[in-house]
Structure formats: structure tokens, C-alpha cells
Image (cartoon, rainbow over all chains, first blue to last red; front, side):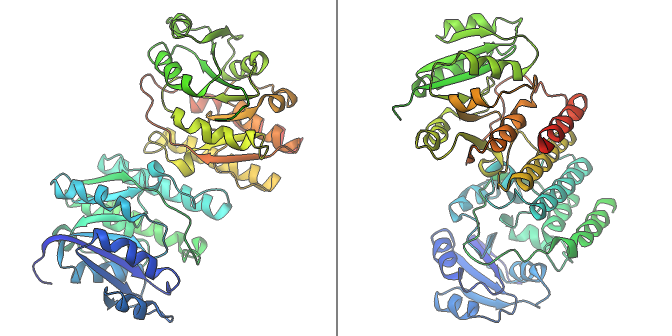
Length: 228
Length: 226
């Protein structure tokens, strides 16, 4: 890992997102000094499209989004690292709001909240109900444990000081890394805040979260990190 | 906005600190502004009158009473319900009214799920309210084949004719879900728009979750299976 320069790295973790990656990279570029695509071994044309648009493409170890995030932290060249999803559900226009508190020295990690910003995805059917409720329980547990008042512990749309990210050791392989990042930052005494960000319906594809298969991993990750 | 006449109704109890500001904020969108006072003891009624609203008293049994009174006395074709504490943004009113004026819906709800809420999360009682609300919404969706996200938000618009047809009975906050279920039961179209819920400008919620949980459950069951 090299020393970082002042600026914004935007990292897009991808796996089989060829339908949307071009739009996302183009919409993100105006806000980024450096655009990274960390690819989880896509079987489609995701990497080729990203490279053709001038993004720096890296492969992760292929075990999940956690791997992708760790790779981004390792290779990021700028001092603020923004994570954004590859499916068009996050609005790049929120990036300045995410970055501002870090730039001002007021926070180390800023998470976008779908609770205060609204979500077009997270309501209405049973799968969403379970995810929403589970997410709320986890957020509540984090709030009580560390005396914070967060509302969304799971949203992948967030910004972190690259240097702070390198100080914590992340081990989760899958989406559970999102809550792990928050808990480890809080445990290290860092400041974690939120800004409202809206989650739009993804432009194509569907969620890769299969709730029933991974619920137990979320609980275990929570317990592990809460009680240390 | 539309050539349909719009009544904006503000049910209020002990909201003297904010009701005047809310009335001023909704005036540009309303042909008629009503404040239904739940027997306030802090001068809410006088403040409301001074701000130019028509003030009525309900029977004092809860927000349900207030809503029923508004439905009874409104002279508009469309009634918009908005809270008295400044948590709802009047700029949403035209978007809420448009589908009704166009004949595409009889009831339009403002959704805090798609619009975001600064109030509804972070501690245990908010968690209970939010989860309970999501659960109720889910059951309504499965029962009537809809895809609603927020059936509890008081911020909504309804065609006055529909409101009078559905014969609402609940006294308290349970009227919000009752209104949705009774509209769906009678075949009326219910849709949503995103609306943002701001921190209330003053005061605290009159909803004591532990005291009313059973009422929400009972109201739900009654209407689901009727």
C-alpha cells in the first residue's frame, strides 16, 4: 500500500454488472479523482467495459463483496475512498455530501442512510421485511453498544478516510463486511456519521443477497464484534 | 394545481407552538384550511383561528375523531391530511393530489419508506413502531395484492366522496390503517408518493407504543378478515 494523495477515489465493486457498469462509471467520473472497479471474477463483459472507459480494474480474491472492499482499500490512491454499488441504485450526486464531513475532519466514516433518505427497494414484500427488520435490529444493537444514533448499518454507499480504513482489520468475506466496518471503526474510537441518501430501484438484475442463506452469518458477525 | 377544490385538514391537540406555522405553510396549496382541535388546553384553537383556519372541535377521543370530523365538514373535493407538528412538507401536496384529480386513485399515501424519515429509527420504541408498521403493511399487501410501503403515515390525500363512503370508525391512530384497508376492501385504488418526514419542530409523539400495540393488532385483524 502506497501513501495516499489528497482527493477522492470512487470504488465500484462488481460481479456480472455489464448491463449497468457503463452508466455507473460515467455518472461517477465527475466526482472522482480516481475510479476503481474491483471485480469479483465476472463471467460477463464487466471488466472489459470498465477498462474501455478508463477505470482502473482490479480482481479481488472472488469470495464476495468483502474481498472487493478489502482490495479497494489496499489499492486506493487518494485519501478519501467512496464505495458505490454497480447497479445504479445509488446516486453519485450524494458523493459530495458523503465526503464533506471527512474532508472537514469531523468524521472518519460517513454512511449513506436509506432510512433518512428513502428507498425504492426496501419495502412491501416479505424478503424486504426480513432484511429491513434484521437490519434495524443490528443497527439498534450497534447504537446501544457504542452510544451512537445510526439508522442504516448495511448500506454499501459510504465514504471512509483511506488511512482510517487501513488501520482496521476487516475479515468478513460477504455483505456482512458493511456492519463489520462500522463496528470496527467505532471500537477503534473513530467517528461514524450518516447523511441521507436515496436508494433507487436497481436498473437491472436483482439482489445477490439470499436472506435465508446468510441470516445466520449476519447474526454471528454482529455478536462477534459486539462482545469484543 | 387542479380545478378540484382542495381542503387541507390539520388534526391537532396541544400544538400551539407549531400549528400557526403549518397553517401558513399550507395556505398556498389549499382552498380551505381546517384545524380539528382535540380539546387542546394550550391555546391551539385560538392560534389556529388567528392564522386564518376554520376551527372545529372533535369529540376528544383521538386522532380518529379528528379525521372523521374533517371528513364531515370539508367542502373540498379532495381532503389532504397533514400533521400539526411541522414534520410533513407542504410542497408534497400537489404531488399527492394529482393522481386523485386525474381519477387514477381515491387515496394517495405519503410514504416515509421511499421518501425517508428523520424520526423513525435509532432507538427501541422507534424500532417497534417501524417494524410493526412494516408488518402491518406487509399483511395488507398480501391480502389485497398491493405493493404499499407505509400505511401508517398520517400524511395523505383522499377524495372526499370516498372518505364519506368508507364509514370510518376508529378513534385513535389506528384510523390510518383502517382508512387504507376500507378503501381497498371497497375496490378503491390506493397509491403512494415518496414524502419526507422531518423531525417534528416541537413536542413529542403522542403515540405510546406499549399502550396501543394491541389496538393496532386488533384493528388489523378485524379489517383483514372482514
